[in-house]
Length: 161
Ligand code: INI
Image 1 (cartoon, rainbow, N blue to C red):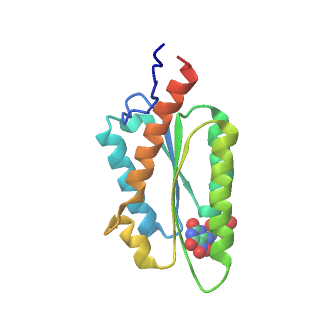
Image 2 (cartoon, rainbow, N blue to C red):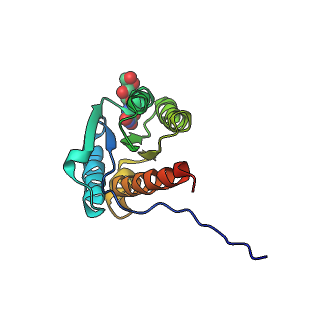
């Protein structure tokens, strides 16, 4: 008896996917670059502007409630969160970054809709710049590619064959 291994993997094609990008205004000099990277990734993967809704929020703290509102509509195949939480002199960073990460993760698992975490959490402004299109790539681009792959993967898994 031979055992046939089946491999499930999501394609990197944005064709036909409905996507929401949630982008925070706090540290907008960084998040604007993340948004450009995400839109570039969608376009290069065969997506079109009409498939993408952009939702602007004040700061990273507001991601969880916004993502839950979006996933509840069932209109989107994936949601992409773009933000930048940069450490300051107080523990504020830990509360904001922790709430954003935990809340985004919980919203994805609870809804069954993939939510990509393109939220930078850095110790310095320079580290954020590096990850928003400079030395360390563009994490907005990466998050969009992850969302595209996961949306296609979940569609396959849900098809169940
Ligand atoms: N929001 C961010 O997105 N990044 C930060 O670095 C940040 N810091 O450092 O304060 C930040 N704070 C605002 C927060 O997300 C909320 O918008 C605010 O507290 C109102 O609810």
